Amino acid sequence: MKKEMLSLNSWIEEATRWQQSLDDFLIDYNMRELECSEEDLLAKMQDMLHVMEKSVEHGLSGVRSHSGLTGGDSKRLAEAVLGERYICFLGEKAMDAVIYAMAVGECNAAMGRIVAAPTAGASGVLPGVFFSLKKHCQLSEATLARGLVVAGSIGMVIAERASLAGATGGCQAECGSAAAMAAGAAVSMLGGSAEQVGTAVAIVFKNVLGLVCDPVAGLVEVPCIKRNGACALQALLAAQLALSGISSFINADEAIDAMKSVGDSLPCALKETAGGGMATTPTALAWAKAYFAKAHK
Image (cartoon, rainbow, N blue to C red):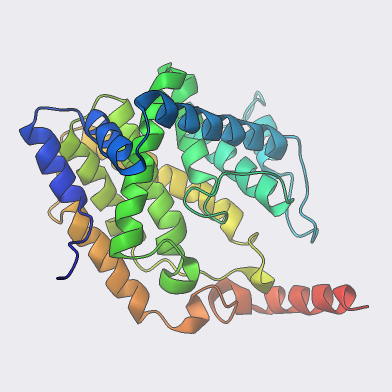
């Protein structure tokens, strides 16, 4: 008998039927699956949040990657927004989400410690959204921990129905999935309904569908770090739309399934092989040639 796939739609319907918030429902679900107490589950989430926070701090110190290709941009952006003449047209919440997301990406490129949520290459999106909302919406540590359970549960559904790997589904499966996880969690943490969580997830995938994985020289640096920042913005946008009462014509499960279909259709050149996209521009190829020649000396 074929096992039924995980379904975010089903979880949303069940939580609504039992008049539970989605975070309560998913905490109960994960306690049963992991055979642990709520206290232990949330303590694990707190541990991961602590690592994420340290990753942001490390990135903001101005670290550079081992290759020398990237580094210092999150610090540069954080300092720029403090300037008297700087025009911040994104707003503080959005700008901080971008800064924090890029900081974690730079921490990762410098071989710092990160939480692969859901992957190392997309590890900046969740911290970017979470710590921006913590700062500007006064969210407690307990709320963030519960939000991380929601994010992780959304990630489980994506992993089973589609993929979280750029080598399988392109960057829509990595940064796109991270944005969907962050968007759903943001809605939950800000008091949205279970249905609105699903709406946010669906909106993200509608906006990132087809995003390719094209790392220059095969390194998780360009365009990956700035793409983390961009997908943090996608998460905030989707959450904002959902919390405003805007619905999605395509539901969450179907949006995830569509992402898988598109990922399956992408050529290998656009799935983490550095065989297409930004990775094969003249500038990228020239840098990669020089980098690998130096590495082999």
